[in-house]
Length: 293
Image 1 (cartoon, helix red, strand yellow):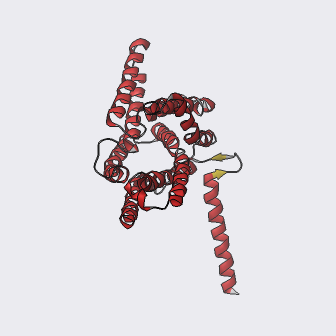
Image 2 (cartoon, rainbow, N blue to C red):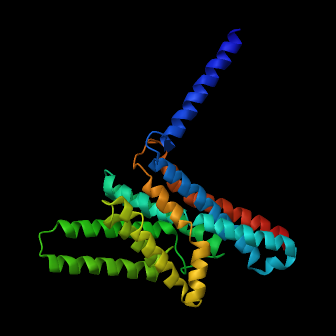
Image 3 (cartoon, rainbow, N blue to C red):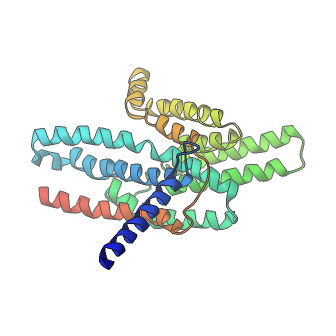
């Protein structure tokens, strides 16, 4: 009898805990997501994206593909397309969370320091997973977020200066242009498109409908322009409609976000997850490629 009572109490405690966690992610009363839910979504979709880019594409687009049966290659190809499309959800959410962090963090220097530290930690595994060697041709997403954060900070400082509107506008545009040039030169993940998205989410932060529409339209158009270096305009539009449409899911989640954070512990988990999961995927990549050679 005592054992049954103990089991019932344990089940009740577990059920209450699960309800509490779910309530922190989705509020049934207001029908809104918390910032914790957005962070979790970005983490999961990013992992899915990197499985496609770091594992499936490594096997599909190298000489290793010759040792894989054709039917298996087709399955891998379609799986990669699905994974990469799902993965498009992650980055806009990360940009939104960066803007929220900029607006509400108690210590921006510490925030910037954390981004810098994990950008440095992540670069080596990032290079090896996606390029196969140390490379300066592509830098991890922490660099984009770091430069985006610095840009917002500089713009806020300029905005608070007692200056005439004309020189204030010119200096602000110079800061934005410099930021766009730096990420393009460094070839950080999403480059200038990422900075434009961060700026849009920041400038339209007071109007939720505009924040979840205009920056995403500009971002989508930017993606089309970006791909024009390799394909025609028609092909670029078709490709973006096929593979980038899931950014609309990001916009909807941001629109329905209540901007509240309930999970205070383990914030460094989400920082550390980025280099950690990339390192694990690289080990898996090595094991698979060696087994197929």
